[in-house]
Image 1 (tube, helix red, strand yellow):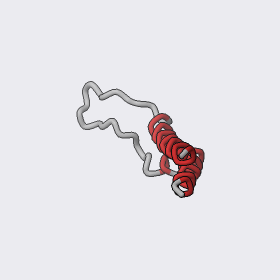
Image 2 (cartoon, helix red, strand yellow):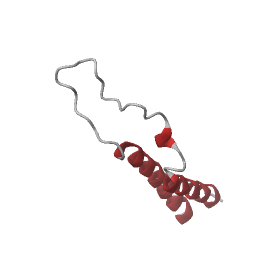
Image 3 (cartoon, helix red, strand yellow):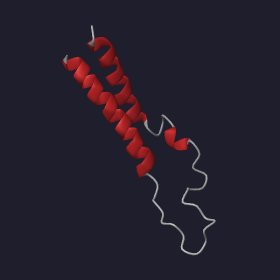
Image 4 (cartoon, helix red, strand yellow):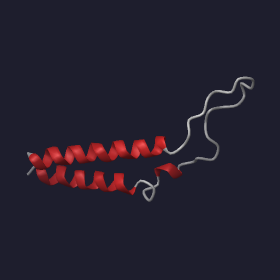
Length: 74
């Protein structure tokens, strides 16, 4: 039971850490005052923020949590 609970906590912590890193690295902008054609989206971000190399700690937490969830149910 403890392994399953610990695995769930680690998995959710890894997921939240990856979301925090993806949203927390860039500066939030404010809407432009005079030009409505400009958007708030950052230029050229692409999918680099989802890279496992950039979010390795979150990936490790999710893998360890998944393993504990799988083997803790036995």
